[in-house]
Amino acid sequence: MVAADKTLSWSYTEEFPVESEPTAQARLRGIELGTDPVSPATGAALRMLAAAGGAKSVAEVGTGTGVSGLWLLAGMGADGVLTTIDVEPEFQREARRAFDEAGYPGSHTRIIQGRASDVMPRMAAQSYDMVVLDVSPQEAAELVVQAVRMLRTGGVLAITHALWNDHVADPARRDATTVAARELGKTLRDEEGLLTSLLPVGDGLLVAVRRA
Ligand SMILES: C[S@@+](CC[C@H](N)C(=O)[O-])C[C@H]1O[C@@H](n2cnc3c(N)ncnc32)[C@H](O)[C@@H]1O
Image (cartoon, rainbow, N blue to C red; front, side):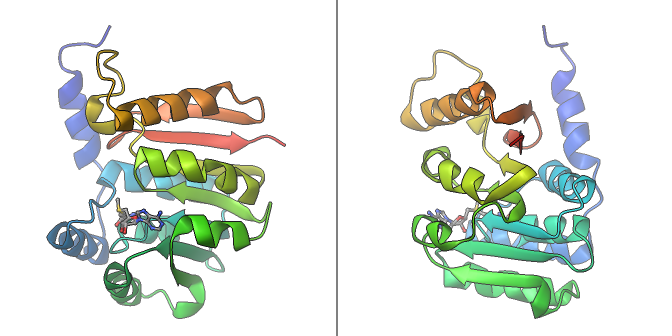
């Protein structure tokens, strides 16, 4: 049972994080360009996960204008490196600007332009402390095997849009995107090598720790 005032709590949760000025600016540019940046609560959760795991090596698919990247960098160690992939060079130029404005030198970020299905297979296995997929559920489902391959034991996988516009929780919704998000969640939940949790922040954040 969900209490009647749950939506109020969810709104409060989203308004709770205080976003840095460069992140707020990156969010505005993302909205202008139509990139759909991660919500503030999702960003804060990503930062917390990166910090809790002492993440030094993080890979992200879906750079956009850099909102999630800035939250991740804020949680990573001073010697951390964020590798972020996107097909759109225009978005990545804005992300570069956002990282510069926030004071992250180029040595902390590796921005790769390309399709994730081409780039990820060339990335090292068991080498990343955290992998974030911020793409559509169908794309995330296609990329998840590569993402897990890249994670070290104890590393964290985070996948956005896991509740897809609140459609995933409604069994009557059977469109392809909703089904992909629902099945991806259940597949990770049932995977013995992962410890999975579904967090109701933003559009739903699926988080899994690689056990072995
Ligand atoms: C939701 S937006 C990312 C927003 C960003 N994480 C942020 O918080 O600012 C998704 C991004 O993924 C990129 N994208 C979608 N499919 C992709 C793929 N298969 N490979 C690489 N990038 C992809 C899009 O160009 C878009 O910029």
